[in-house]
Image (cartoon, rainbow, N blue to C red):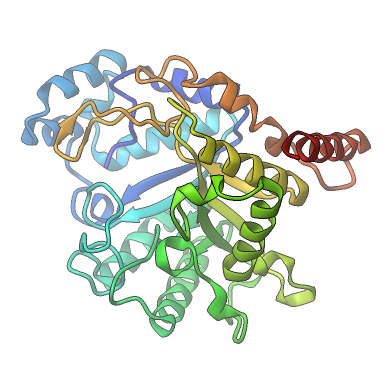
Length: 362
């Protein structure tokens, strides 16, 4: 219920680091209960109630005003600083009950689960959509992170994605609506036979997540020649999820890869092969994507205070890149590689990378 890192660095410094890393947008996650049950709770009091007084003291040291704010006020402050420094924001509903995400049976996975009341979820989305209608940095809203579990079904997904999209569009017609598929945002293939019918025009964007361990064990990325394996993996990804943006005419729907990432502390060969494959494909198709994650660590996760995040772009203290070499490999994907204003040199550069990769791997 509070964006991470405010116990490690001043908020303006964190946003400046985002800019230096070449990112132009933040997928900012939140819990529904922050909006519907704890909006008026003070940040400092919440940390005291959790026995995290030492973390609260560090937040007060770097961001003294935050501990006296309510949770919604603190969320506003983060949005405002991102906007002040020219960073766009996709507000992503990550969970209902505040906790680490995601597990198959954590009560947060699908509509009707223990903590996932659809009515309360719709209320939270509507409140935030209306609250940020005049904040132009808020360019989109993610309906729900990684739907999953025994309850998931196509019919229920269609029902609530439509209801949520309509509610957001009525409250705030300015924002894009990001809808992830089922099975941890990895499956949208049921839309091939029957596309989603909406009333919110061209605001719909499908969201998918892709990691080395998506759709199979990570070790498969080392079991075949990379060119052969990469083609097969991309074909599978397009078939299950990414077909939406390759469709022609009115059937095409933009795709946002809302999470992609590998650990930055020690890059294994399997992770390295995965990133090589994804990066070339993403650059070729000029995909929009989000790296998981920015955070160097957490206030409190899995009953541990100050837990490190090995996938984080920033170091444990949020003061430098965790792995500069790894982040440099993202640079080509960060460019706009299609469009009339894109220089032709970029296309030559992509071609050279493809040739070099092929040569090195054979």
